[in-house]
Length: 183
Image (tube, rainbow, N blue to C red; front, side, top):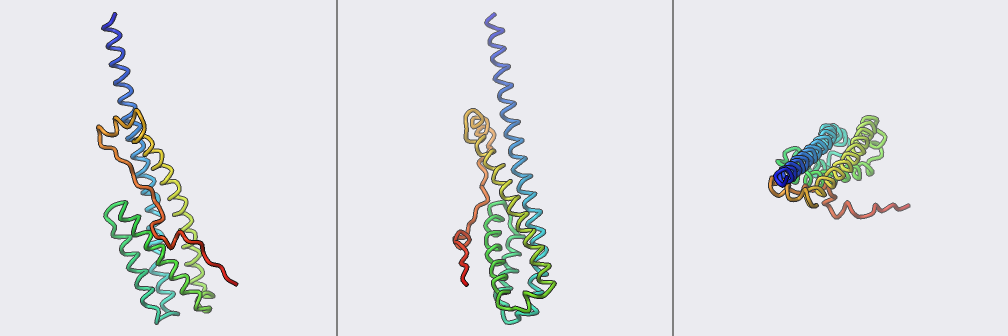
């Protein structure tokens, strides 16, 4: 009789182990899927930036330094080798994009240009999509990190080297500040 109890306990432990491992694999795959979805939206924005820069160049030829920074930030974001580097470069790109729209404020003709307005609208939509995908990514990462850090799945996670994933956070202190609106 005790043999059956031991076999039953072993089978239950084995089932618990398999279920915990599978849960971690599913969580890891969801994190990767969420990042890939966010990456698709960032790529869409990435593709729109050269058109926006070219439109602004026509109006603001002497603002080339600002425009070059936008292109450099775009290229750095596109050439990132891993998720953490991509997240850091995206924060720099966000700041550069704010600068280009601030630059546009100094050129009333540019603000009225239909190409600029269309591009700005497309970028606004892309930014909204990116923001939503970042929220989803962070929610999936939170759930995965909870599995990695809590008992009993943390035992399985440590055995198979499942590690906490980084949240997508605002890296730039300037992005955390409130926008100043003055009349």
